[in-house]
Amino acid sequence: MNNLHKWQIWLLAARPRTLPASMAPVLVGTSLAFSDGRFSPAPALAALVGALLLQLLSNFANDYFDFQKGADTRDRLGPVRVMAAGLLTARELRLGIATAAGLAVLDGLYLVLVGGWPVLAVGIASLLAAVLYTGGPFPYGYHGLGDLFVFIFFGLAAVCGTYYVQAGTLPAAILFAAVPVGLLITAILVVNNLRDIETDAQAGKRTLAVRIGPRNTRRQYLVFLILAYAATPVLWLAFDFGPAALLPLISLPFAARRAYSIFSEQGKELNAELAATAQLSLQFSLLLSLGILL
Image 1 (cartoon, helix red, strand yellow):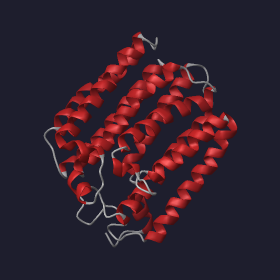
Image 2 (cartoon, rainbow, N blue to C red; image 1 turned 90 degrees about the vertical axis):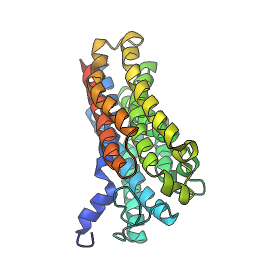
Image 3 (cartoon, one colour; image 1 turned 60 degrees about the vertical axis):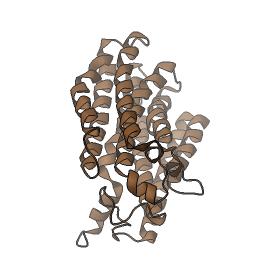
């Protein structure tokens, strides 16, 4: 690891496998705007850039604060964390956090000009949520609230916000369409927390997985998958999205394999499952976006 170039180290810190999860809700929100004749390229692009920057900010902050609080050590089961591995200093990572936050603010200023005070409120809340997951006096990720906040900000807010900055309005159908996207993105965190139950418990990180135990965490994952796929016929029948809204069901066999694996794997085996769940989230969102456009 010590022979890595600096850019490779920052790439590790960025956790590139997590970035598609931040892109997925923007794609869905943009496809919804397009289908309603409200597509606007500049706000859509700014929403995508903002989502990626918030994901980077969250990743940098988690790396920094988890190490400071003793949750990340050299013995962790997950992928390398740059501070725990001694690849970046605290000062360097703080600079990365400040840079990502600053760029997110600049991007957000444009979106506020487009969307007004509702975008400002959501933007401030999203910035705080990205940092306070593991930082601040009450890191909500350490108190079992991470799943809820990821569902709200990386699911509902991302889809609805992307649509709103293009359309200037927010019908109930858009909010419902965001639900399955948010559930599958949250499922990625569920796998992460399931893998880290023992080390998180030892570090005093009381994630929801630590609180409810591995068996119920696996059940939580299964319920999230079931609810996400059950939402597609509702989009068709209750919100008049048309039968093309059922396109995400094409990925159901892949989802079934994920459900089987989550009950049969543990420890480091869950690293592959985490990546596969991220792929599932992106596949579902791409198929849903295509169905909406059709």
